[in-house]
Length: 454
Image 1 (cartoon, one colour):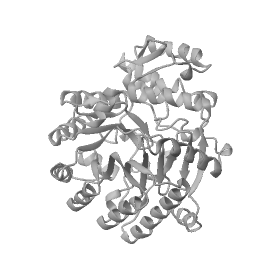
Image 2 (cartoon, rainbow, N blue to C red; image 1 turned 90 degrees about the vertical axis):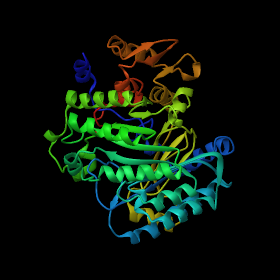
Image 3 (cartoon, helix red, strand yellow; image 1 turned 45 degrees about the horizontal axis):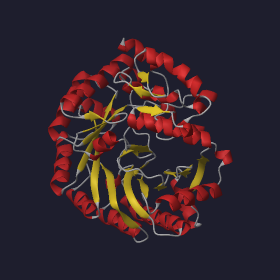
């Protein structure tokens, strides 16, 4: 039965870090003025209540990882650090001038690229520079992504002293053959070392990122990776499906052959095995692809129904305004999205001209806002409802009809003018979200845009 469902529902589909998804933005109806208007509107409503979030993209890496789809610049020249930090602070100052009032920052996430590519001094200058124009919210949460091979004790200590309490380390898989294929060779010793350092220093949430479906990955590799992970006891885990989308990511994902990648039912068995072992070791499923122990804030947020999802992933802190700083970063004002230019030289040039480096975006319509809420509900709570008139839209009867097939397959059940995803349906939550995706239905992609859903 599982293989039958896999064959039926394993289709290309969005990961829904946003709705509308980026390919369905309407840039022709977007302008710089619209972005500033939506930015100010949300800031005025939320700065003194929930605060705002910052995502800061630090794009430099010393070597390329062939599974990665993020914007990055590969270099071993660390002279690139200072100009980039100065540019980030210039961009932040432009935003602060536009907002006209000191922001209260509830959440910061340093992503990449490799944030720990940067020196301790430059990271300290970045955070101190941010707070020369902002305040920390009372319940702030700061996090960063660390590479096990170059995160030092001093990195962890300094960022802790600056208020960071959560760190995630990219592990992916411990098999030497898999690591070589994805060009991410790092020892278990290095992962253990940084994990123990972080715990010793006092980080309250340590996360590991794992991926299933990687080239040459087999059952032994998954079991070994989960067993090693268990021994280190991270507080939360991301257990992602490898997205093989070489038409987007270019030659970086062509370091191996397609036949080296686990397919369909083989890939699903890797996930089911990993998921079972995580359950056995005290991890609970939190939204899509994420697991946490009961003492972690992510588990508490899921239990309380306050889990949130945005371009940074899952978060226990919900803010309606998230400003993205850095090349390629995406900002979210709740009523609009704006993406920064993807070319580093152009990013620097726009900032030299005292212009925000935004190059495209989308203003959400009333319909977008309603559909977005349903997709967020499904991603964060595994359920949604249209009993409240504000959550109802005219295509609901059509969606109900489409969902009948998924109900018959045991993926969901109806309740109180809404739906609830079953345990069997959780691996197919992206497919369930697609039933609500009106833009996707109205215009089926003519070319490959998305990874497979399962």
